[in-house]
Amino acid sequence: YFHIMTPIPELKVQKLEVAGFIREVFSYISRFKGQLFIMKIEDSLMDHPLFPVLIRDITLLHKLGIKVLIVPGTRKSIDKQLSAWNIQSSFHEGIRLTSESALPLVEQASLGVSQRIMSLLTASGCHGMQGNWVSARSLGVIDGVDYMRTGKIDRIQKEILEQLLKEDYIPILPPIGWNKLGHAYNISSTELATELCKYLEVGKLFFIGSECGIKADDLKTGRLTENLALTESGLVSALDIDQAREILDLNTQLNYGQVDYLVNAISACKAGAKRVHLISGEMQGSVLQEVFSSRGDGTMVYANQYSTIRPATIDDIPDMLRMMQDYIAKGYLIARTSENILDKLSDYVVYVIDNAIHGCGALHAYENDSAEIAAIAVAANYRKAGIGEALVRHLIDTAKMRGKKQLFLLTTQAPDWFYSFGFEPGTVEDLPPSKRATYNTKRNSRVLVMTLG
Image: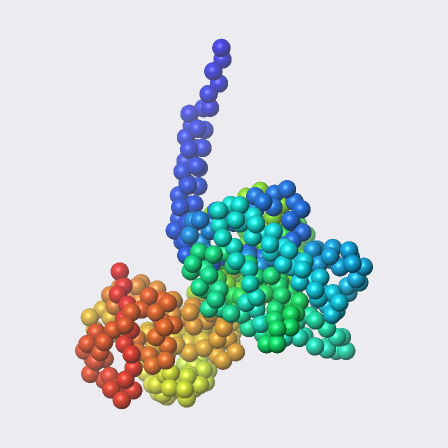
């Protein structure tokens, strides 16, 4: 008989590729374990034969230690429910105008989608939990258009979601919000997924539907986008937020789904999401491919937080003082002058978006290989955008890079916030001698410490 064998060199190459893939998967598992992934899943996928496979793949991520939160899209289900009752529904600038008579059916359709997802999660060995954790208010009348029972998000109950995630549940948030009187409002699932990035620390946000990504064919590019990385199927693999904005500006021919994705990806990145992915739920394994390889099956928009954090310059001092003033008035920070900052200007960094400064912080070096994190301040309208977190993490990484052995900070109001980064309670005796000598006993700040490896 004939025994056909793969040539030895080719077999060796295949084994090396497999080994390289395995290493890549392990590195990503280690990197993403404990992070939160938000999945916005269009209900148009529910009739697709691969929908149960998609949910199963998501549960695999959860079982690997990745936290998962699901926001179901519900437009198709709502359309179907309203049509069955012969209720007409209209849209204005992409927003559904929800009447009083339509609202109960909207609620029923939205909760039905959530229940279907929860059933599939249970079948795969995970526990989903849906609830009314979104406060909303009426959109009202805008430019003469009455949005009736369509609302916008007022607040998300972050503490409940964090507790559910901690207890290994997968929260499911249908796009329905309630006001203080218990009245329901129909809200946008896309807005909900993006808004969550302001409240929670999000590693990845996925928009999963029938749209597979931004196609490179006939795409107009500019100075920032002339050398884009592409996937094997000809999609734009990755964009930073400035490149995404340039693609939007130059390409009016993009369809609604692509434009909507890019606009919301930019917003989500600014709100704190590190990566925002557009992938097709009609392709088997698309979520796993996107998570566990450097070049997946869709388009990713990312916020490179280190590229937006730079050393402070003398021209930045007025903006830094402006941001600090509110914190000083509340007793969170000690008062500083321009001269104080200028004297140690090389210790300061600023967080910049579109050449505007929205946050600052400092890393002061002390003896015994120790350093202090200080002067963390964020512009008032950006305090839910993850800027403070990004600054602290940047300064921790900088301290490690400079070979520091211990970090410390003094705080009067925010010990719990700093605990989330790994700081622990300390005492004045834990401070380096020169800092201990100047400790303000009247202010009586708490001392937090962190030992660096």
